[in-house]
Length: 399
Image 1 (tube, rainbow, N blue to C red):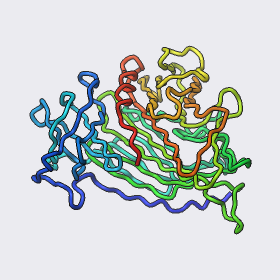
Image 2: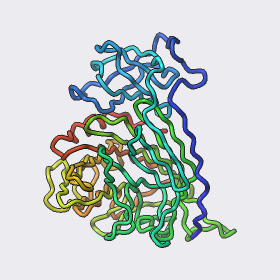
Image 3: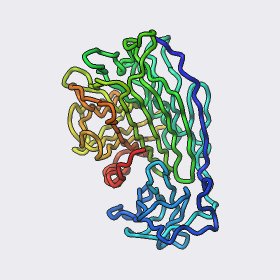
Image 4: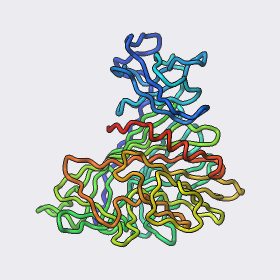
């Protein structure tokens, strides 16, 4: 298989007034208003999505008027038009906004090398995006995934090349069945006859969140043109929002979009009742690891049951400190609530679409949206169900 992945280009853009945007001391249009949604739990400090009333003003960082003397800091995602708020939230309803005076410094940074990009909040690492193909002695080659994912105390939460399943790779998304018409085009889950080629990585920073954005294409040596070159089959674009941490949690959003580049693409899971494939978080299993979903704590593995969220918590690394990862799905998911394959040995998988493949027609992209809640301590204090409620308020806007 060809593995000469193109050199990754990295662009860092600090959040601040863009060219032609309203800057400090400038007035926004008189119709610049933002609606804060109702139903957010009282005292909530994790990110909340708000919506501008009328047209979206120019600029990236704002202050939303409210009950607090200095208002609430907000940052715009210009790709989706969503205004994200964190901190002391104003009451539900419509509020005026103004440009931030420029005192809110960017909270994140990215450092890249020939393997990928590390996103840190201050000096604390958050995650590493593996853009270059990585293998184990030339086998199990995968690119375009996240590992390590770090807890709030700096411990590594994810596993790469676990001995029980070498093809499990941190946070990854892959399918057993990749069809082009009636021809099998490799097995991305097992990294057989398949490679994700990451072409571009970009980074956007700000005081409330950063975005790591990557573009890639799917290749298989089983699908070549007349010149013997592999034909790109699917275009993949991922946007990873890393939000500013609170004392006990950090929210990370994944929005992954797939566009077929040829006719006849179908995606499916394992061809058995478990149907595993799709978005997967492979954690470091711990002796005291516990799995929860909407139905409660799971004494055994959970196979094929539906839940909007799941959580794995336990002791990661030395020191006896408990951390956890809550895994949420957005209601825009193709199947909601989705079915899961939850394993105490560490694999936490949203099993979409299951054993029966689904079509990915050209011109009809597939969007998968997930939120991870990295929490300090066990499940009991993590408020995962409340995080799910707030996540379901986020508009399903595309980029």
